[in-house]
Image 1 (tube, rainbow, N blue to C red):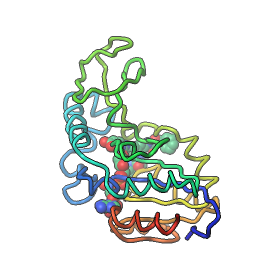
Image 2: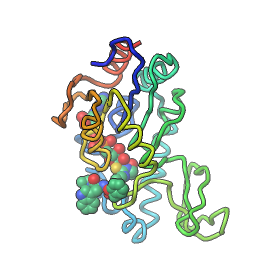
Image 3: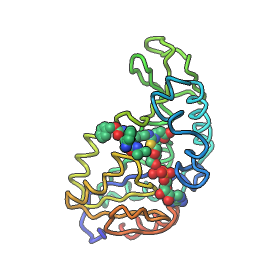
Length: 232
Ligand code: BV8
């Protein structure tokens, strides 16, 4: 799988599983976030319109967890792969935590937004999120009390899709780490990369059966460093 020595263009897509061993909850594992909250209430624009305070409580709690969490060996191994410069690494994440950045990754593509970002639902201004956000906090640009987390909710258009599609069409290897492959369009990336001629690899303790050429079954904190070591 890859690793034949030639420089490869590698697209890595991470999901909640890469942050699981840092203590941040996944969504669909047992006790996952979607078992504690109804997705419709906290991760849709309709839910935000209905009860912005509930949505801010949900994201304030996740932001607190994120601030007190630390990157794990999987995040660090991806930094090692990037800094080795032996391959061109494009890191796309569905995650809204900043553990990739705090480990040292650069140019991380957050297709579902970021917990540490704030967005004005009225004028589209963006700014660094305070630790605790409130719906009636005035936008620093237009002063409207329309503050929301800069997160892509269900039914909203993921960020950076054009760039991501360009990378998928040009990559030699596509690797999905710690994602259940249930949320689109991210879940379709393996097919797009495969159709464009890339090899595809899944790293997950519970392989999703998503049509990958190769599967490494294991937790990210051990399987990702081992995979990176096989490459550099
Ligand atoms: C869009 C931000 C159009 C919020 C998220 C019917 C009606 C309406 C919509 C749809 C529909 N059918 C399909 C859709 C589209 C919808 C969708 O896919 N719905 C699903 C539920 C069916 N998608 C959308 O609405 C998207 N927008 O489609 O717009 C469009 C399309 C194309 C181009 C342009 C426009 C927007 C989706 C974004 C929603 N926002 N998050 C937040 O984070 O709070 S999604 C949410 O799920 C997170 O981002 C999360 O990252 C993502 C995916 O979940 P995973 O990361 O995979 O996490 P999960 O818990 O599921 O799995 C964890 C995995 O880790 C497991 O496999 C587990 O085995 C593994 N694991 C566990 N421990 C470890 C581990 N792995 C490694 N190591 C471990 N230790």
